[in-house]
Length: 354
Ligand SMILES: Cc1cc2nc3c(=O)[nH]c(=O)nc-3n(C[C@H](O)[C@H](O)[C@H](O)COP(=O)(O)OP(=O)(O)OC[C@H]3O[C@@H](n4cnc5c(N)ncnc54)[C@H](O)[C@@H]3O)c2cc1C
Image (cartoon, rainbow, N blue to C red):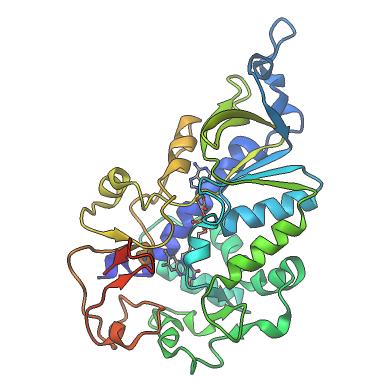
């Protein structure tokens, strides 16, 4: 069971960070103006001049989940004109950020978190700067949500203080008590009254809506191709299938790939994770497009075999979950989850997980 436990969460997260950093290295770090294809000038023409652009932004953010919302918000604050796109139709955007348990890992003790997360990632390469940045972020998340996403401080629930509303959450505090540093880990959520119900996602959505003068949002708009200057290697734009029509958007200062994982891409799941029987919880739209797009422009990958267990439920077989087990838990507060097998059916009757 440990193979799909939250122990792999950090490893999965590091994949996400690497993908973001890769996107930055490929795109965002290009000097201002490089996006115009300056590196490939020939006969007064640049590579960018050879493309029929339908629109232009400073920054394009691919994927409107939590990562995309945060990237778009801060780019806009820095003065960028931002396009934020999502593959899902309007009303389904938000990715797993929308459907997840809305629990945020938080701590006031960065050094303890570094020990804990280094322990969680044991056996994998974990560069010090990645660990440092990740754990620094854990200590800043609450203040960031207060200052930059308008979440009132009094709305926060600190689960370490009180788990009586949802006793199962205590199992994550910490999930691996045998690893040093875990005692300093807290889980917080942004609504004291109600756990879940997309409250974190709603805070992100509201903030993005309030910045509509700086951020355009397109739903039903998957990114399908990145344009890369052949000389400078800068990513200078992308093709978006906007409502089914290809649109070439120039990105003067970078493209951010924040388009989730590959849990709904059966081939990738089988190939990278070796899983064949499973159902997927969360969004239907994370199909590994970011992996394909980044591959297209020469990105390297790491830790592809590590994954976050919340995304998968294994079809056909239901697992009995024992209260004492540390390896598989669900944040859903249903007594049947700790006493036997279960099947959860969506309220439209179309989707299920076991
Ligand atoms: C059931 C469940 C419960 C969870 N509970 C928790 C929890 O309580 N706490 C926690 O910390 N983590 C939890 N997680 C994990 C957490 O949800 C994710 O790690 C997090 O939401 C990832 O955020 P993201 O922005 O990277 O991706 P996502 O939120 O998944 O967003 C990716 C977005 O990219 C879009 N997209 C995909 N392809 C394209 C494309 N080609 N072009 C444009 N857009 C595209 C998708 O439509 C999606 O909206 C849970 C996950 C699940 C599935």
